[in-house]
Picture (cartoon, rainbow, N blue to C red):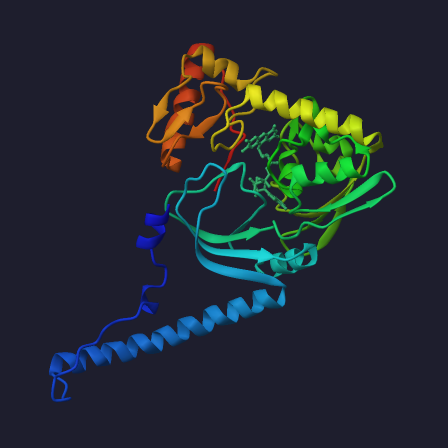
Length: 342
Ligand SMILES: Cc1cc2nc3c(=O)[nH]c(=O)nc-3n(C[C@H](O)[C@H](O)[C@H](O)COP(=O)(O)OP(=O)(O)OC[C@H]3O[C@@H](n4cnc5c(N)ncnc54)[C@H](O)[C@@H]3O)c2cc1C
C-alpha cells in the first residue's frame, strides 16, 4: 500500500524541481525555454491551488476536513487511491456537506467494512462519517449519529443497562452503514429496534423516516436506492441487567471467534440464498482454501475472503466470481453479493 501511494502523485506539479543555471549567471536558450515553461506551469499551479483552496474553504465552512490523494482504507486492505476524502465532524456538518456536493459523484462511508475499493483511483469524493459519533440516551431510547461504531454503541448500551443490540456487538461497521445494509447477526437485525432514522436527500433536504419507510428487508433498506444519507437514528431498547447483557455480548463474541476467520475481510461476501448460507454452497463446491494472489477463501468460513498478505481488489474479485460460477454450475443457484463495490 505504501509503495503504491509513494509512486502515485495526484499533483505532480507541486513537486519541487531543481533548475540549473549557467556558471556566470547568464542563462542558456534551453534554460530560458525551461524558465518560460515553468512560468506557464507556475501560473497553472496557482489557478489549481486557488480552486482547490476555494473548495477546501467551502467544505471547511460545512465543518468538514478535506484530504486529497488518500490511500483506500477498506477493512479488506486492498484498493488504490481516493482522489478526495471529506470528513464531516457531526450530523449537521454531514448534511451541509451533502448539500454542497449536490450533483457531484460521491459516496458516503462509515467504517468501510463492507466495501471494496477499486485498485486504481476512485475519482469521486468519499465522505467519511466516522467523526460524527454522538450518542445520547433518554429512558429506554438511544440516539446515535451515523458514524458511531456498533461495538461502541453496544458497549454504551450495556453501561446504561439497555438490552437488544448484543447480537450486533461483533459487527465492526458504523450505525449509518448498518442501517443502510440492515446489518444483522444471530437472529437480530438492526431495523427491528429503530424508531426513527434522520437522513438527508441528495438535494440536501433533511427528512425523518419511520421504521416502515425504511423498507427494511434481509441485508437491505431503501437508503441506497433512494440516494439518502443516514445522519443518525433513534432506537428503542429494553431495560435489563448489565451483568446479563455483558454475558450475552461475551457469548456472541465467542461464537464469532470459533466460527469466523481472524484475518482482514469484508465479512460475508454473499447474501444467504433461499435462507441457506452462501458458505454452505461454496464449501460444497470444494473452494475452501482456494487462493488468488494474496486473497484466500477462508478455511474456517467459506463465505469469507481473507487478505492473507498484499491482496488486491482484483484478487478478491477473481475469487468471488469463481465462487459464483462454481455454485451456479453445481447447484443452479445464483449468489448475490452482500459486499458493495465502489
Ligand atoms: C469481520 C467482519 C464481520 C462482519 N460481520 C457482519 C455480520 O455479522 N452481519 C452483518 O450484517 N454484516 C457484517 N459485516 C459487514 C459490515 O460490517 C456491515 O455491513 C456494516 O453494517 C457496514 O458498516 P460500515 O460503516 O462499515 O459501512 P461501509 O462499509 O462504510 O458502507 C456500506 C454501505 O453502506 C453505505 N453507507 C455507509 N454509511 C452510510 C450513511 N451514513 N448513509 C448512507 N449510506 C451509508 C455505503 O455507501 C455502502 O453502500 C462484517 C464485516 C466484517 C469485516
